Length: 79
Image (cartoon, rainbow, N blue to C red):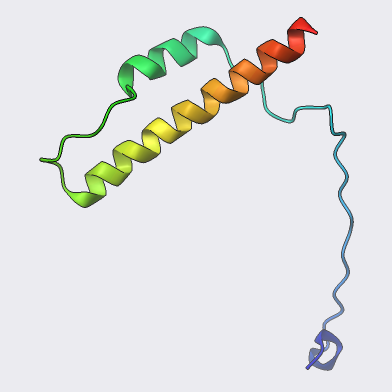
């Protein structure tokens, strides 16, 4: 069954981003330092439940993403 059979016309629009332009806002170093203190890169306690462990891992993954973005932005600003 095609979308036209349902009375729906599907169209797509190609989105092109400039490959050298970052869409991520600037990440300030003081923010990273504070987040790194609050959510350190360490294994969660095994006394925690599964959900709490995954929650802690998710918190740290956000910090890791921001650190990687900060490092990328720093490299780009030096060139």
